[in-house]
Length: 503
Image 1 (cartoon, rainbow, N blue to C red):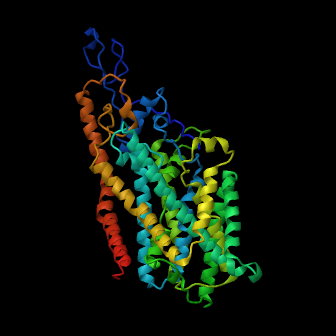
Image 2: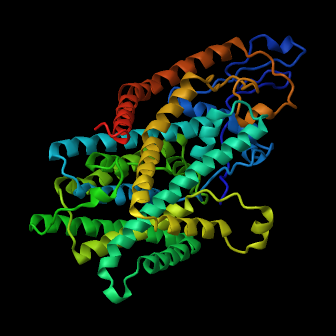
């Protein structure tokens, strides 16, 4: 894993200067030459054209220079994935839309108008939640969702045991979800390819074992191979959509009984919601803004707009590629369609496995093994989960659907509400005191002497910037409280009723 490189910035304030006044400073106190002590000068930045979320980042980056990486002191990787160019980030933002969730849509019989409304709503909420994660990652200066959740759950960095326990718990939940998702893709890929295999060589166990070996080989190969595999999965999906729509136009489709083999929560609407789920927004945005080490870094606003454009374009393109499937209400047992579907799902598994957190293996095993032993265990577990019998498969599919949908839509809403309504706001120009923001890297620098009370002019500027930050955040607050929370609440009520067999 690559570490995030520091982004150069300019200090937002100057705490002390020489006893002689600086003629270049527009805020120097008049009449200060006669003072014998060191006068404090207040240097206020031009913040009218800047994003308030960037004020805090620029303010604290200079404090970190020469003090070491605070994330390394916590054992937190500053960047969970290597820096990536915009084209690769766009590929990883687009590919989750074009997988199994989209392929389940033709099995339903929901009226076209309801399917279109569900697709538009799910795509808009997906892009909205991605931007919420992006803002939270910038605001809290974290590069993974795990670190953001730990910041919300653990109050104070001195609670080492609670932090370690929370990290292991969150990692275990993410590991379980990613392995269930990879097993779901692998199981469907095997089920699609088995009818194509000659009867004498047809074996569920043998086919699963061969595909697991292929997935492991791709996962252990060069990262560029995984990127190419993801691109091949995207291309095969486009070919699959063309083949399905052609079969639909020529009336070659037959009714599908796919819903009978899945859990209680699966239908066309839930498949659309599952197709619009994503999980790597924060690390992808961090890898995008930390990339381009050979060129001068772009301004923060420009990098933010770059990710916003990638997010919007990937969501719009994904919705357009899903749209033809909403019109089709049946599936086709065609050989070409089965092969394309199997290839699409198979080559999407390596990226899912590689994004799974490593297992907490003992140090002796990690030093002894010359390869990634955790990757072998994860792939083996994925292969075992893909072979479970149909009754258990329905339960695992329901659990995967719940984790994917709640992690995409409900979790960012709860994180946003917790950070901005139940935590003290992070300061912008006033010096951040260790006790003001528990759980942040700056709260453990106890060696520093207590800072003097801020200048009244700085306090006034701080209040103005906090008010500006609140104003810019108002749109996202309205979207969360008016749209996202009610939709998630209705979904939870519906899921509870389905599991209770009430409807």
